[in-house]
Every structure is written in structure tokens, then in C-alpha cells.
Length: 196
Image (cartoon, rainbow, N blue to C red; front, side, top):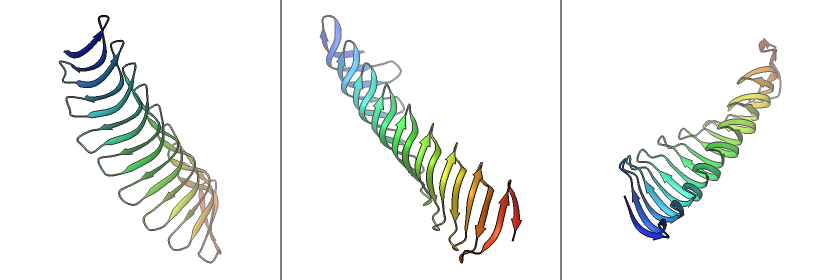
């Protein structure tokens, strides 16, 4: 059901559109489509407030759900696209770039537990150069692929020990492990550990 302005027999201007499924849109229309500023509330009480273009969220907007999930940022054709902040029900948070609805390019993901990843993303996964820090201060600095440590990198432990070299699928492939004083303790060759 639509209540609002019309132009030449087409929905245009300010109005309210309610569907049988329980969706309600209040805002601007152009050529019969949601276009301009508007608010859409779904039957599950999820709500989008922001800019619309040709029927889709497009531009700046905020999307929230009652479970605690929210996104504040840029949209393109109904998907998160550009810079934004996404907060999850478990209180984790991502601040950075999105592409086609996924974390992409560059961003920071902070876990409620205190862990944090800062770096490059691709298709929603850690991918490229990044730093993963643990709550105890330990960290990995280096390359990631498909969400795993993969490529050249250094893992530093709270004790001062470190392991540097090549990683594959989150595990050391070829590298050297040092104690806090810089003495070699272990080597990895083709994924096999060799104690020194």
C-alpha cells in the first residue's frame, strides 16, 4: 500500500510504502522507485536509514538489526561498498573498506577478546600484508592468503622469542626460530621442524 505524492501517474516525491510481507519504507521516490533519503524497516525489525538510488541503498546509510549487528558507511546497489564500520552481535568490529558486500582492500578487525588484525583484505579474508596481534602482545607481521599466514612473515612471542621466514596455510614452512637473545633455537625446512 502506498500513501504519498504522485507525478503523472507515477509514485514520485515523499511517501510511505508498506508491503504485505511487513516491509515499510518512508522517504523519497523517483520514477516509482525508492530514490533519495529514506528509511526501510523489515518485518524482523532490521532497519536501513540513508540514501537510495533506483530502488537500492546507495551512498551513505546505516543498517541495524535487533541482534546487535550494524553497519554504518557507504553502499552501492544495495551492498556495503566503500568505507564503513560493521559491528557484530559478539561485539567484534571491523572498520575499513568493503567491496560488493565483503571486507576488502584495507581494514582493521578488532575481536572482543582483544585480538586484532590490521591490514589488507580480499573477498572478506585477510589477504596481503597485515599484522595480527594477540592480547598478550604476541604478533605476526607479514603476508596472508585466504585468511591464513602465508608468505614471508615474522611471529613474535611475549617471551621475546621469534620465528621468521616463509609460512604456508598458517604454519611455518621454511624459517628460523630465535630465543629472546637472538640465538637460533629451531629451523623449519619444507614444513619439518629441526631443533638446534
